[in-house]
Length: 264
View (cartoon, rainbow, N blue to C red):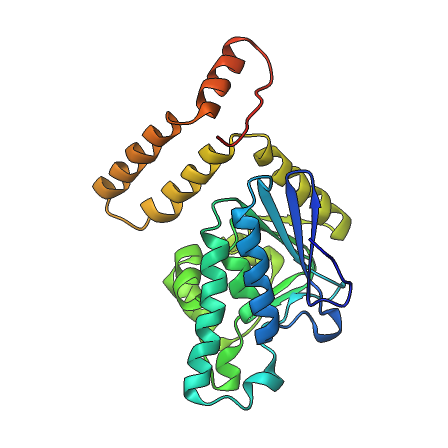
């Protein structure tokens, strides 16, 4: 993929790992429509690329992962145009959530509004101690539009989600971890990069299709009744046995060697 440092989104590859960076540090990595569309295009490519087994999503600069919507763009929208903007954001967050590959949000600063909602769609969220999280839309006469009103209660519970949404007040990384909004807090940005890459590479060593099916089972099975979730799990478990990788994985274990998974 061609990289231009002026692009709103950068994508770099390192073997099976893709690093996606929102590249608008001068605007606190805000998500204007062009940036949302570029993120959607890049994640669509990563979804189709069998060589990519895990993704890290981060923001450029030291201040923000993403401060959310570009308010200068929102200011002139009609109600119908606002619906299209929200739907574009929801398309992106749904794509990230159902990529079929783990996406790790590496959060080194503010994650606010749509930026916080984008982080929620990721498989895991790792943040520095200085990071802050907010859904401040109510302060602007708005409400979350990229899935935050649905995902946040599932992550931290209804009462805590409503407090964040209705007050609009930011919370610190330590509090976000206590609530379950983020999964790990590290000291600084160097530790953030190291922790994110280590987690991504651990997963990247496993069978890609097994990872994909497990993600599907958890993401969709947990939303169903128990009997339906178990039915989905058994169906996906059986699909593993249609792959070459399951034979390789079992053989490697019995032969006491490292497996060579091909994603087939």
